Length: 308
Image 1 (tube, helix red, strand yellow):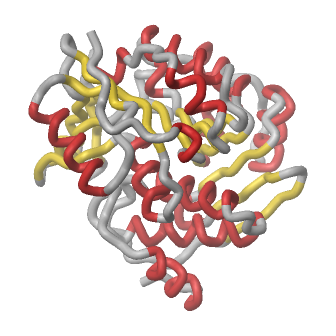
Image 2 (cartoon, rainbow, N blue to C red):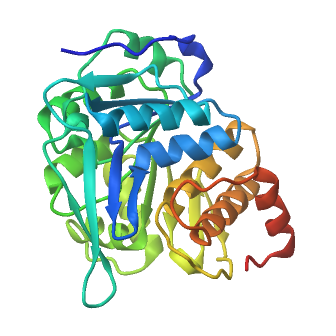
């Protein structure tokens, strides 16, 4: 049984719709809100883009806290479903012996059971971008809803976010075949292209994906080495920014939000990529994926060419 959130807005107001997981990252230092769709929505909101997020939470304290946090941010919660059988999502994060963070993504949880609602058709068909990832397809209920939404989306943005063991080749290739715009990092590029090609250069790997899956536009993030955007048949390279990294959690999500926001503003691909890279670098300097900041801070940092 699902409970509708109140204060429904005009679906036409949301130019970007994100779909998938909202959860709590349980870190050694404490619990913080997380999930790639939530992070993307947060940074889009910071740039005045009024995103909507389709997700599901449990009828528990953690779910209530997420709704309050989103409401305090001023981000739409109209499309949060409430699941009476499954708890709000959690991810346990612990450093290993190499000081690398290892994640345990709990399942099943509420966002595994996002059910279709008739309001979604109008919401998604009127959006400029529909953003989704691979994680929310690990359960057949949310997967079925996702593929139904993809039938109505005008521009389908796949932020692949591969999280072992919560994906398989068949589903990833299904998602790729639906995408109009793909965002992935170097490791994901190498993994996916290794399934069907022997290419080693970035350019050849990208071409193999665009040819096989007929994806029009694609961006590859390369950490401190920057990013490369393939957009409308052209290639744009953005060098990385020198940053004092605090943590990289959410920096890729911020990058994607920055890129889409600038494209919505009709910025050139060069300017959109530059801003996205600066925003991603800025977030890597902060603690957590969704720090408090002003967009003017990003522009000020971009003027220097160095983020420190």
